[in-house]
Image (cartoon, rainbow, N blue to C red; front, side, top):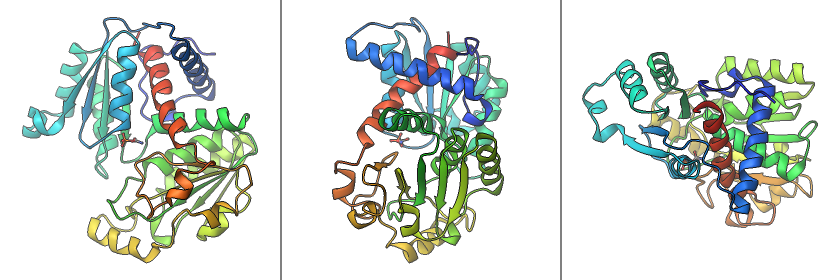
Amino acid sequence: MQTHLRGRDMITTQEWTKDEIDTVLDVAMDLKRKRALGEPHPYLRDKVLAMLFFFTSTRTRASFEAGMAQLGGHAQFIDSETTQISHGDTAKEIGEILGRYNDGIAIRQCDWGFGNQYIRDVAAASRVPVLNMQCDVYHPFQILADLMTIIEKKGDPRGLTINVSYAYASSYQKPISVPQSLILLMTRYGMNVRLSHPPEFKLMPDIVQQARDNARQARGSFEILDDFDAGFQDADIIYAKSWGAMLTTTDHEESARIGRKYTNWITDERRMALAKEDAIYMHCLPADRNIEVTDGVIDGSQSVVYDEAENRLHVQKAVMALTMR
Ligand code: CP
Protein backbone atom coordinates (compact mmCIF):
# COMPACT_ATOMS: atom_id res chain seq x y z
CA MET A 1 0.00 0.00 0.00
CA GLN A 2 1.30 3.47 -0.92
CA THR A 3 0.66 6.21 1.62
CA HIS A 4 2.11 9.28 -0.06
CA LEU A 5 -0.35 10.24 -2.78
CA ARG A 6 -1.27 13.73 -1.54
CA GLY A 7 -1.15 16.34 -4.27
CA ARG A 8 -1.03 13.84 -7.13
CA ASP A 9 -2.95 14.43 -10.38
CA MET A 10 -4.96 11.57 -11.91
CA ILE A 11 -4.88 12.19 -15.66
CA THR A 12 -4.13 8.63 -16.79
CA THR A 13 -3.62 5.42 -14.80
CA GLN A 14 -0.40 4.94 -16.81
CA GLU A 15 1.20 7.65 -14.64
CA TRP A 16 0.42 5.73 -11.44
CA THR A 17 2.36 2.62 -10.43
CA LYS A 18 0.56 -0.68 -10.01
CA ASP A 19 1.16 -0.42 -6.23
CA GLU A 20 -0.53 2.98 -6.23
CA ILE A 21 -3.51 1.66 -8.21
CA ASP A 22 -3.76 -1.29 -5.83
CA THR A 23 -3.93 1.27 -3.01
CA VAL A 24 -6.82 3.05 -4.74
CA LEU A 25 -8.70 -0.24 -5.11
CA ASP A 26 -8.04 -1.18 -1.49
CA VAL A 27 -9.31 2.19 -0.21
CA ALA A 28 -12.29 2.05 -2.60
CA MET A 29 -13.34 -1.34 -1.22
CA ASP A 30 -13.03 0.03 2.33
CA LEU A 31 -15.12 3.11 1.50
CA LYS A 32 -17.74 0.92 -0.18
CA ARG A 33 -17.96 -1.20 2.97
CA LYS A 34 -18.20 1.91 5.17
CA ARG A 35 -21.03 3.28 3.06
CA ALA A 36 -22.88 -0.05 3.19
CA LEU A 37 -22.57 -0.03 7.00
CA GLY A 38 -23.55 3.63 7.31
CA GLU A 39 -20.17 4.52 8.87
CA PRO A 40 -19.34 8.22 8.41
CA HIS A 41 -16.01 8.81 6.66
CA PRO A 42 -15.48 12.60 6.43
CA TYR A 43 -11.85 12.51 5.30
CA LEU A 44 -12.28 15.73 3.28
CA ARG A 45 -14.22 17.91 5.72
CA ASP A 46 -14.28 21.58 4.55
CA LYS A 47 -12.52 20.67 1.27
CA VAL A 48 -13.97 21.80 -2.06
CA LEU A 49 -13.70 20.22 -5.51
CA ALA A 50 -14.28 22.29 -8.66
CA MET A 51 -15.95 20.16 -11.36
CA LEU A 52 -15.48 21.82 -14.74
CA PHE A 53 -17.52 20.33 -17.57
CA PHE A 54 -17.15 21.06 -21.29
CA PHE A 55 -19.37 18.09 -22.15
CA THR A 56 -22.54 16.43 -20.86
CA SER A 57 -22.50 13.85 -18.07
CA THR A 58 -24.83 11.86 -15.86
CA ARG A 59 -22.72 9.38 -13.86
CA THR A 60 -19.50 11.37 -13.61
CA ARG A 61 -21.10 14.55 -12.33
CA ALA A 62 -23.48 12.79 -9.96
CA SER A 63 -20.85 10.45 -8.50
CA PHE A 64 -18.16 13.09 -7.95
CA GLU A 65 -20.69 15.44 -6.33
CA ALA A 66 -22.18 12.71 -4.11
CA GLY A 67 -18.69 11.45 -3.29
CA MET A 68 -17.47 14.85 -2.08
CA ALA A 69 -20.56 15.25 0.13
CA GLN A 70 -20.03 11.78 1.63
CA LEU A 71 -16.39 12.69 2.37
CA GLY A 72 -17.58 15.77 4.28
CA GLY A 73 -16.70 18.32 1.61
CA HIS A 74 -18.45 20.10 -1.23
CA ALA A 75 -18.31 19.98 -5.04
CA GLN A 76 -19.05 23.01 -7.19
CA PHE A 77 -20.40 22.40 -10.70
CA ILE A 78 -18.93 24.74 -13.33
CA ASP A 79 -20.24 24.66 -16.89
CA SER A 80 -17.87 26.02 -19.53
CA GLU A 81 -20.75 27.50 -21.54
CA THR A 82 -22.17 29.63 -18.70
CA THR A 83 -18.86 31.00 -17.42
CA GLN A 84 -16.26 33.37 -18.82
CA ILE A 85 -14.42 30.30 -20.14
CA SER A 86 -16.67 30.72 -23.16
CA HIS A 87 -15.28 34.28 -23.51
CA GLY A 88 -11.60 33.37 -23.21
CA ASP A 89 -10.47 32.40 -19.67
CA THR A 90 -7.34 30.38 -20.48
CA ALA A 91 -6.28 26.99 -19.11
CA LYS A 92 -3.49 28.73 -17.13
CA GLU A 93 -5.99 31.17 -15.59
CA ILE A 94 -8.34 28.32 -14.69
CA GLY A 95 -5.51 26.36 -13.04
CA GLU A 96 -4.22 29.39 -11.13
CA ILE A 97 -7.60 30.74 -10.01
CA LEU A 98 -9.68 27.60 -9.36
CA GLY A 99 -6.60 26.13 -7.65
CA ARG A 100 -6.68 29.02 -5.14
CA TYR A 101 -10.41 28.57 -4.36
CA ASN A 102 -10.46 24.78 -4.24
CA ASP A 103 -8.63 21.70 -2.98
CA GLY A 104 -8.97 19.83 -6.27
CA ILE A 105 -10.00 20.55 -9.86
CA ALA A 106 -11.83 17.89 -11.87
CA ILE A 107 -12.27 18.44 -15.61
CA ARG A 108 -14.18 16.80 -18.48
CA GLN A 109 -12.90 18.08 -21.82
CA CYS A 110 -13.32 15.53 -24.63
CA ASP A 111 -12.58 17.66 -27.74
CA TRP A 112 -10.47 15.58 -30.10
CA GLY A 113 -6.84 16.69 -30.21
CA PHE A 114 -7.41 19.26 -27.44
CA GLY A 115 -8.95 17.84 -24.25
CA ASN A 116 -5.93 16.05 -22.79
CA GLN A 117 -3.61 18.99 -23.48
CA TYR A 118 -6.12 21.39 -21.88
CA ILE A 119 -6.22 19.27 -18.70
CA ARG A 120 -2.42 19.11 -18.62
CA ASP A 121 -2.20 22.89 -19.09
CA VAL A 122 -4.58 23.45 -16.16
CA ALA A 123 -2.57 20.97 -14.06
CA ALA A 124 0.68 22.81 -14.85
CA ALA A 125 -0.81 26.03 -13.42
CA SER A 126 -2.67 24.48 -10.48
CA ARG A 127 -1.43 24.17 -6.90
CA VAL A 128 -4.01 21.43 -6.19
CA PRO A 129 -4.58 17.97 -7.74
CA VAL A 130 -6.22 17.84 -11.16
CA LEU A 131 -8.54 14.90 -11.85
CA ASN A 132 -9.42 13.84 -15.39
CA MET A 133 -13.17 13.23 -15.61
CA GLN A 134 -12.66 12.16 -19.26
CA CYS A 135 -10.68 13.65 -22.09
CA ASP A 136 -10.14 12.75 -25.74
CA VAL A 137 -7.48 10.16 -24.81
CA TYR A 138 -8.28 8.76 -21.33
CA HIS A 139 -11.18 8.06 -18.94
CA PRO A 140 -9.22 6.89 -15.87
CA PHE A 141 -12.00 6.85 -13.27
CA GLN A 142 -14.27 4.76 -15.49
CA ILE A 143 -11.58 2.18 -15.94
CA LEU A 144 -10.64 2.08 -12.24
CA ALA A 145 -14.33 1.35 -11.54
CA ASP A 146 -14.29 -1.31 -14.26
CA LEU A 147 -11.25 -3.02 -12.73
CA MET A 148 -12.83 -2.92 -9.27
CA THR A 149 -15.99 -4.52 -10.72
CA ILE A 150 -13.99 -7.26 -12.46
CA ILE A 151 -12.16 -8.10 -9.23
CA GLU A 152 -15.45 -8.17 -7.29
CA LYS A 153 -17.12 -10.45 -9.83
CA LYS A 154 -14.20 -12.64 -10.93
CA GLY A 155 -11.45 -12.41 -8.32
CA ASP A 156 -7.82 -12.27 -9.47
CA PRO A 157 -7.90 -10.73 -12.97
CA ARG A 158 -4.70 -12.47 -14.13
CA GLY A 159 -5.41 -14.81 -17.03
CA LEU A 160 -8.98 -13.60 -17.61
CA THR A 161 -9.90 -12.82 -21.22
CA ILE A 162 -11.56 -9.44 -21.80
CA ASN A 163 -13.00 -8.51 -25.19
CA VAL A 164 -12.80 -4.71 -25.60
CA SER A 165 -14.88 -4.27 -28.72
CA TYR A 166 -16.36 -1.60 -30.94
CA ALA A 167 -20.16 -1.68 -31.22
CA TYR A 168 -22.33 0.46 -33.47
CA ALA A 169 -24.26 3.44 -32.08
CA SER A 170 -26.25 6.13 -33.83
CA SER A 171 -26.54 8.77 -31.07
CA TYR A 172 -23.15 10.52 -31.39
CA GLN A 173 -19.48 9.88 -32.16
CA LYS A 174 -18.32 8.72 -28.74
CA PRO A 175 -14.73 9.39 -27.60
CA ILE A 176 -12.09 6.67 -27.85
CA SER A 177 -10.98 7.31 -24.27
CA VAL A 178 -12.79 4.29 -22.75
CA PRO A 179 -11.32 1.56 -24.99
CA GLN A 180 -7.89 3.23 -24.81
CA SER A 181 -7.91 3.35 -21.02
CA LEU A 182 -9.24 -0.23 -20.85
CA ILE A 183 -6.45 -1.72 -22.96
CA LEU A 184 -3.87 0.25 -20.95
CA LEU A 185 -5.01 -0.83 -17.49
CA MET A 186 -6.27 -4.38 -18.07
CA THR A 187 -2.96 -5.39 -19.69
CA ARG A 188 -1.12 -4.23 -16.53
CA TYR A 189 -3.14 -6.73 -14.51
CA GLY A 190 -2.04 -9.73 -16.58
CA MET A 191 -5.29 -10.12 -18.47
CA ASN A 192 -5.62 -11.47 -22.00
CA VAL A 193 -6.89 -8.38 -23.76
CA ARG A 194 -8.63 -8.59 -27.13
CA LEU A 195 -9.29 -5.35 -28.97
CA SER A 196 -11.94 -5.91 -31.67
CA HIS A 197 -12.92 -3.25 -34.18
CA PRO A 198 -13.56 -2.63 -37.88
CA PRO A 199 -10.50 -1.29 -39.73
CA GLU A 200 -11.66 2.35 -39.64
CA PHE A 201 -12.02 2.37 -35.84
CA LYS A 202 -8.37 2.06 -34.85
CA LEU A 203 -7.09 3.51 -31.58
CA MET A 204 -4.02 5.77 -31.22
CA PRO A 205 -0.88 3.85 -32.25
CA ASP A 206 1.17 4.96 -29.21
CA ILE A 207 -1.60 3.82 -26.83
CA VAL A 208 -1.76 0.44 -28.59
CA GLN A 209 2.03 0.13 -28.29
CA GLN A 210 1.87 0.94 -24.56
CA ALA A 211 -0.81 -1.76 -24.14
CA ARG A 212 1.46 -4.28 -25.92
CA ASP A 213 4.37 -3.30 -23.64
CA ASN A 214 2.16 -3.55 -20.52
CA ALA A 215 0.97 -7.02 -21.55
CA ARG A 216 4.52 -8.24 -22.08
CA GLN A 217 5.66 -6.91 -18.70
CA ALA A 218 2.65 -8.35 -16.84
CA ARG A 219 2.80 -11.69 -18.69
CA GLY A 220 -0.66 -11.22 -20.15
CA SER A 221 -1.48 -10.93 -23.84
CA PHE A 222 -2.80 -8.35 -26.26
CA GLU A 223 -4.27 -9.01 -29.70
CA ILE A 224 -6.30 -7.04 -32.24
CA LEU A 225 -9.21 -8.64 -34.15
CA ASP A 226 -11.47 -7.29 -36.88
CA ASP A 227 -14.14 -10.00 -36.53
CA PHE A 228 -16.91 -9.05 -34.07
CA ASP A 229 -18.05 -12.63 -33.34
CA ALA A 230 -14.49 -13.92 -32.86
CA GLY A 231 -13.94 -11.44 -30.05
CA PHE A 232 -16.74 -13.05 -28.00
CA GLN A 233 -15.38 -16.59 -28.30
CA ASP A 234 -14.69 -18.02 -24.81
CA ALA A 235 -14.22 -14.55 -23.29
CA ASP A 236 -14.72 -13.99 -19.53
CA ILE A 237 -15.67 -10.33 -19.93
CA ILE A 238 -17.49 -8.66 -22.80
CA TYR A 239 -17.00 -4.89 -22.94
CA ALA A 240 -18.45 -3.84 -26.31
CA LYS A 241 -19.20 -0.16 -26.83
CA SER A 242 -19.26 2.40 -29.57
CA TRP A 243 -16.59 4.94 -30.44
CA GLY A 244 -15.95 7.31 -33.31
CA ALA A 245 -13.58 6.77 -36.26
CA MET A 246 -11.32 9.59 -34.96
CA LEU A 247 -8.13 8.09 -36.38
CA THR A 248 -9.74 7.87 -39.84
CA THR A 249 -11.63 11.17 -40.01
CA THR A 250 -12.19 14.16 -37.75
CA ASP A 251 -15.47 14.92 -39.55
CA HIS A 252 -18.38 13.70 -37.42
CA GLU A 253 -20.71 13.23 -40.40
CA GLU A 254 -18.09 11.15 -42.19
CA SER A 255 -17.48 9.13 -39.02
CA ALA A 256 -21.24 8.49 -38.69
CA ARG A 257 -21.39 7.42 -42.36
CA ILE A 258 -18.54 4.94 -41.83
CA GLY A 259 -20.21 3.62 -38.70
CA ARG A 260 -23.41 2.83 -40.63
CA LYS A 261 -21.46 0.10 -42.46
CA TYR A 262 -21.32 -1.75 -39.12
CA THR A 263 -24.88 -1.65 -37.78
CA ASN A 264 -24.63 -5.43 -37.27
CA TRP A 265 -21.98 -4.88 -34.54
CA ILE A 266 -24.60 -5.18 -31.77
CA THR A 267 -24.15 -7.25 -28.60
CA ASP A 268 -27.02 -9.72 -28.58
CA GLU A 269 -27.94 -13.01 -26.92
CA ARG A 270 -26.44 -15.15 -29.72
CA ARG A 271 -23.08 -13.45 -29.37
CA MET A 272 -23.09 -13.59 -25.56
CA ALA A 273 -23.59 -17.35 -25.91
CA LEU A 274 -20.21 -17.52 -27.70
CA ALA A 275 -18.50 -16.27 -24.53
CA LYS A 276 -17.94 -18.40 -21.41
CA GLU A 277 -21.13 -19.46 -19.67
CA ASP A 278 -20.30 -17.28 -16.66
CA ALA A 279 -19.07 -14.31 -18.74
CA ILE A 280 -20.08 -10.86 -17.59
CA TYR A 281 -21.30 -8.01 -19.79
CA MET A 282 -19.91 -4.53 -19.06
CA HIS A 283 -20.63 -1.08 -20.50
CA CYS A 284 -19.66 2.33 -19.14
CA LEU A 285 -23.04 3.82 -20.19
CA PRO A 286 -24.83 5.57 -21.72
CA ALA A 287 -25.59 2.79 -24.22
CA ASP A 288 -27.74 3.05 -27.35
CA ARG A 289 -30.26 0.35 -26.41
CA ASN A 290 -31.16 -2.15 -29.14
CA ILE A 291 -28.53 -0.56 -31.41
CA GLU A 292 -25.30 -1.05 -29.43
CA VAL A 293 -26.69 -3.83 -27.19
CA THR A 294 -30.05 -5.56 -26.90
CA ASP A 295 -32.31 -4.96 -23.89
CA GLY A 296 -32.07 -8.70 -23.25
CA VAL A 297 -28.30 -8.52 -22.72
CA ILE A 298 -27.99 -5.22 -20.85
CA ASP A 299 -30.91 -6.12 -18.55
CA GLY A 300 -29.98 -9.80 -18.42
CA SER A 301 -28.35 -11.92 -15.72
CA GLN A 302 -24.82 -11.53 -17.13
CA SER A 303 -24.93 -7.73 -17.10
CA VAL A 304 -23.07 -5.94 -14.29
CA VAL A 305 -23.59 -2.39 -15.59
CA TYR A 306 -25.24 -1.04 -12.43
CA ASP A 307 -22.55 -2.36 -10.08
CA GLU A 308 -20.01 -0.94 -12.53
CA ALA A 309 -21.70 2.48 -12.44
CA GLU A 310 -21.86 2.35 -8.62
CA ASN A 311 -18.14 1.66 -8.39
CA ARG A 312 -17.44 5.02 -10.03
CA LEU A 313 -18.45 6.55 -6.70
CA HIS A 314 -16.11 4.40 -4.62
CA VAL A 315 -12.96 4.70 -6.75
CA GLN A 316 -13.40 8.46 -7.12
CA LYS A 317 -13.83 8.88 -3.37
CA ALA A 318 -10.69 6.81 -2.87
CA VAL A 319 -8.59 8.95 -5.23
CA MET A 320 -9.99 12.20 -3.79
CA ALA A 321 -9.38 11.08 -0.20
CA LEU A 322 -5.81 10.01 -1.06
CA THR A 323 -4.83 13.07 -3.11
CA MET A 324 -6.81 16.04 -1.73
CA ARG A 325 -6.08 15.77 2.00
N1 CP B 1 -19.65 6.55 -18.04
C1 CP B 1 -19.68 7.90 -17.94
O1 CP B 1 -18.64 8.57 -17.89
O2 CP B 1 -20.94 8.39 -17.85
P1 CP B 1 -21.35 9.93 -18.02
O3 CP B 1 -20.94 10.35 -19.41
O4 CP B 1 -22.83 9.96 -17.81
O5 CP B 1 -20.62 10.74 -16.99
